[in-house]
Length: 229
Image (cartoon, rainbow, N blue to C red; front, top):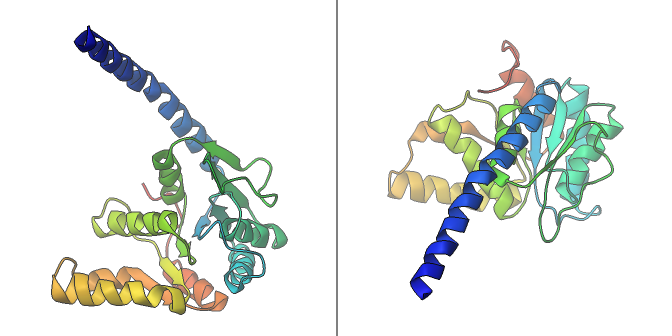
């Protein structure tokens, strides 16, 4: 009897997994249809826990304003903290402000600075991450937590393995990122040889909004902006 119940439960799981494919397809189709119309954008990442009085919140607003003044839109995860700051800067600058929201048990709620027709909701992190990468001409990565690191390293891996075209990955905040980059250089590269020296050239470390814009402008001076795969 117990064996039969286990077998029945396993069959139900497999059936649910099969039906989930249609929900996943729906998220991809909706995302592709809406995101394909937004034009050249830069994705901004960072902690949802960053408060408005934090220096990195204020810096993100400034960076986003200058990004839209330079002719790009801004894509964020749609929530509070750094995400809110990114959308706020884009809104204040009169540019495209996109929010890719994810349903979470804590932290996440959409912020008021997203364009009303450019707010998308996702259940699946992996679908959402495809949208960040596919429709961004650059990543600006502010101080954040596990989610920020996940998005940073995924983009880095996709570029390193030539699965997508190269675009600027800009880390903002030497005081936050220096320890991680020192570990990458000394441990991954020099001690274990797990990456090549040229991989370090995929990353830019800056501290000001003007540096962010200079890197984007220099990279795209003679490039045609387009989705990345």
